[in-house]
Image (tube, rainbow, N blue to C red; front, side, top):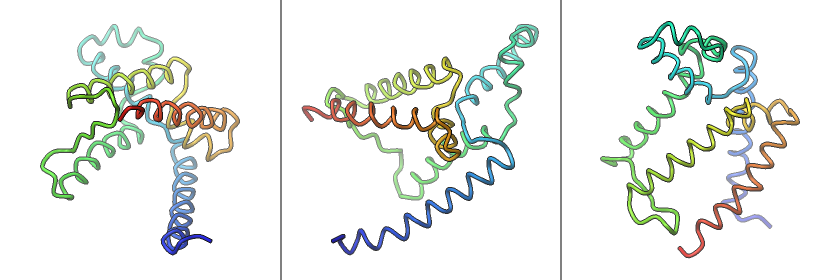
Length: 169
């Protein structure tokens, strides 16, 4: 028998799920599948375009992915601004850094390992011609086989990896 807090949370999660589904369907209808990883090479392309315009124009990938002014750029900016706003509104003076892995002894090491992990995940996704959030969010929402396989792989590898990193903590 579910506890009172579980049964109270179920309708809320159901409404959130319906809301997320409607938002995703509207996004796909208006802009295309949701995904943000292409924003990073677009940002590099925008910088190269300012610094070395002829070089940027000669790169087929940068030409193919287009400019930085897109809805995905707003999502990336919203992630950063939303995180900062949430931090400020919660009364924290600076975003908190939790040392979640057993080997982390300092904030600097936490930032470094988070950056390296994020870079490797993004690099692998771009190398494979995909987008991590695009596969998980949009792919599963569209019931695409690649999205379902990638999502299953993320959880199948992410959960044991997190447990391994937590070992000894």
